[in-house]
Length: 291
Image (cartoon, rainbow, N blue to C red):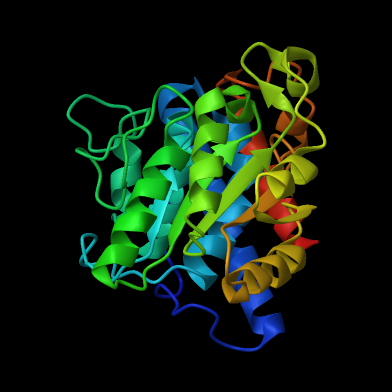
């Protein structure tokens, strides 16, 4: 597995160009490690991991306050993975952050591993909530943020959702409650890759215009290309400065981003990759970094 070349950075250190380059390289390592983990099982939610890598790199290397050696530090910002099947991406990000050893990624999905295929808080350091059934994460984030406020704790709560998760009514109930309480310590991030288990999102349940809906629910909402690191940096900085209401960053991402072989895969929600294709995928990823 690919190891860190730099320690976990303090949030927003360096000038903008340095931040963008640091995030870009972190995203590359996250993608590389996600491919390596995927090869252990031969299949999985590889496309989502590749697509959301830039978002996770921006959050973990540039925004979150945390102590890698102390995942339960009371002052940490909380990052909630509402979409538990994205665990492969989160583990790669936690290795990048130094919370789990990069060498441990080789155990992904194996018996007695701390890295199950769906994220579980009781198994893995740095995992705040257990995933599985969708629609719970934002409600938990709302409760956490409200509790932190009552404690006088200035930590922030991030919640990563998928566009398919917006089909769940509980998500919108939580959005109402979060706005009602003016929880400006909450930042939701929606990964819009336009695909879910039953097919294209637009065909399963039309959710557009997504950004307008969040604003109508009382949220400060921005929408960016989630694979554009510079756009992510600017948007996250704006959301960090916002006060008075919760914020949401809607990120349009591409399934399989960075690996053309997998970007064009027809059945991409849960992806089967042939044995000979893994090295091709890694080679394409390296070629993309060099460009």
